[in-house]
Image (tube, rainbow, N blue to C red; front, side, top):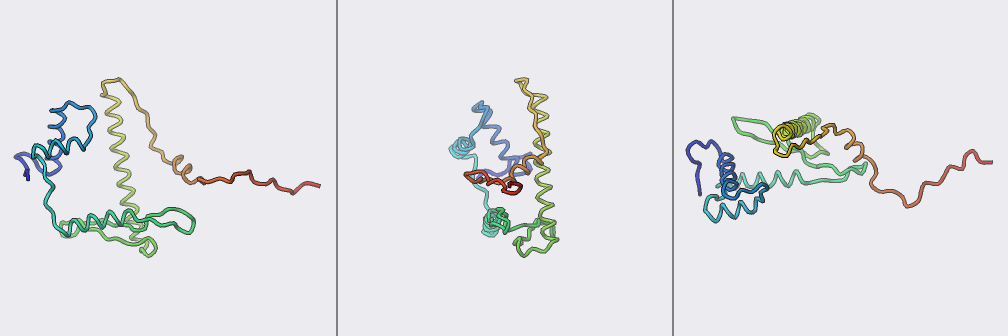
Length: 174
């Protein structure tokens, strides 16, 4: 397996260099990561990282927990398991709880952490948009709203409607 090269501080640095090397060699504007994978494997530039069974188990279990949903009494599809991430003894840990039995403080922290994560994505998306608008070779300008109120209101509307209009009220007729 290829190890870190001098001057590279992380696996992420190694992978970014690998991607940039592929782009330099192929000159592609849009990249299919399947092609990058085949290219890197053929040249023996990448091997999967060695990892422990415990870390594989935790990663798989966390993915499974995040993907479990149920329908609440109001008919909403709701994520069932929620994590709170924290650092203990310089290691990142997480505690999971079921939404039906989670103490309020656990849910508050979990939802706040997820909101901060979403905000981070919005901030980076806005920065990327601004940079593209200022620097793209096409002179294109992309406008984008980050107010999700209308999206949330639309998603709250019913998705199924009756075939016929509701019957008109008979009140007021003689």
